Image (cartoon, rainbow, N blue to C red; front, top):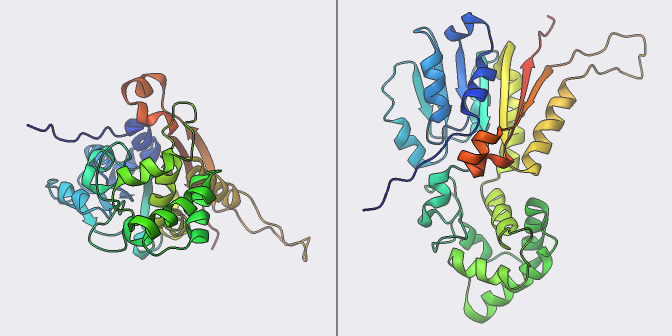
Amino acid sequence: MNQPLQHITVLLHEAVDALLGDDPSAADGMYVDGTFGRGGHSRLILSRLRPQGRLIAFDKDPLAIAEAGRIEDARFSIRHEGFRHIGELPPASADGILMDLGVSSPQIDQADRGFSFRFEGPLDMRMDTTRGQSVAEWLADAEVQQITDVIRDYGEERMAFPIAKAIVAHREAHGPLQTTTELSNLVGKIVKSRDGQNPATRTFQALRIFINAELVELEEALQASLRVLKPGGRLAVISFHSLEDRIVKQFIAEHAKEVYDRRTPFAAPKPMHLKALERIKPGKAEVDANPRSRSAVMRVAERTEVPA
């Protein structure tokens, strides 16, 4: 009998502690889990909330929505949408917003999702399997330059152009790539392993990010958080690779400084929107117990008071 796929939530207690802070009244607030996943953060948040508290979650994955259906709690609701839709919540309504940007272990380990080069499966990689184009469908028509740009920009892969040429050559000679194994083997003939990392790691990352528009969604969700957070509300974002973390870091830095108008040097500066609080990484014990957590970085910021 197959064992159920398990997911270990990264920075579980650290994220919820950062979100709720030290104020006891925070337990009565309204919070947003932008990426429900398998519900680790959501369940701990609910355990910390009082009866007046509320939690709204978002996720694109139908399996995550099914998992959320197991939570019988009137304080909880979930929307089958990506976290860019956070912006549809009322302005200044949230006391805290959490975004855990990682792919869950069940998604990676479930072969038919096509996220992993370790398992034979269809070349899909969609977070939401009910809509949109799969990686195989996109690669069936994409031109060499399009594929090169995606693998280079989202995977930071130096061999992006040779990989793209090989994908198109395979398509012309044998038909489009259909499985994870086909893509992994093709990339393995071009890229040498780096520090024990599978040669296909960067290519798979790039295609997953692209097909799910992950970086675009992150940028939209971060901007939305400024509108939705109350003054004093917390933003906590856990990222797992440098492209995500760079976006989060730059967003917080941009909004955590006063802006002066050079054309009117004596005018008061525009107020900052965020105050950077912490940068947290998993401790040794967590990394030893869950090696997938080793690349995680959580950045925490607080929405500042905006003068009327």
